[in-house]
Amino acid sequence: MKLLFLLAGISIIITSIRAQELMEQSTFATSYQSEQISASQVIYMINKAADLLKKDPEAAIKAFQQNDTGPWNRDNFGLFVLHVNSGEIVASPSSYDNKDEAGYFLDPREINGKAFAHAAMVKTLDNTSKTYTRNLHIVHDPFNDGSGDFYVMTLPNLEGHNYVLCAGQENWGMERQFVQKMVSDAVDLVQISGEKAFETFNKQSWIFQFPKSHIFVLNSDGSLAYDSGFNRTLAPSKYTKDESAFVFGIIGKVMNQRTGMWTYDTWPVRNQKLAEEGYGDPKWYYAKAATYRGKTYIVGTGLHATDPDAAAKFAQDKN
Image 1 (cartoon, rainbow, N blue to C red):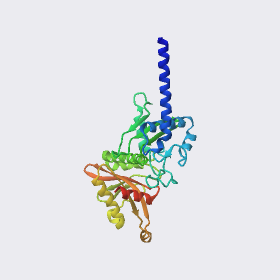
Image 2: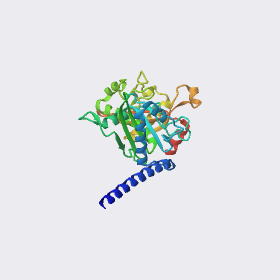
Image 3: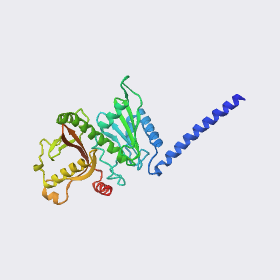
Image 4: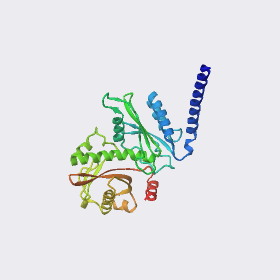
């Protein structure tokens, strides 16, 4: 009799587990009908992606990059894959052909993911054993604006490469995380060592160097303290009228929002004819204030949007 009860109990458990698996599969299949994917569904997808990456990194990344088909990049779920050493986003939901999402995303080719990826790796490293332990962690609603949580998984030493998988309940927020982490780390360095931090920004092996994005630093009077793209320091008097308005606009916004701010604006061109025709360099900018020995600096970076017109409308609607 006891044996029968035991067998019946085991059967119930197995049936329950199978039902749970079927429910998860069914939930996953219909999840994209809702506006925001659930936490369990995000974790399911990240674990599935990790398994593929472990088996064949090259084939997996190729599959992740197929933005127009497949389960990896939809309106309410996007998988980001960061290469830790280079900082490159090797896969992301930002598709240049996806006009429905254009303008909400930053150009992934310009995003420097080194700071975020390195922090994720360090967070999962056991300092005692120097081994990676808990490789999945959650960033809880970092913007406190309903964007949801972000999920980060580290995959070290896959064929000599380190990867970080990221996904969130809102894609634009995930990209903001990468950019804000780089700027925040730069702010921390300036607050510790002042302008000596600029030497660190220039080091090719460090987290601030990236082919298409970089850190800039403004003094509170509007002069340019640091920009790797310039071989000279610009004083406020050297700016054109439009450039001066742009620079002091950034400074004013940051001073009013010391925790950091996003803005969408166009850096003016110096050619008067082009300027009159409306040409410029439209970008998203993120900047944050840093203080060292009583002196205030504005630290930031700028990145292109995938669609400037849509980005401008989105920024206007938010403001």
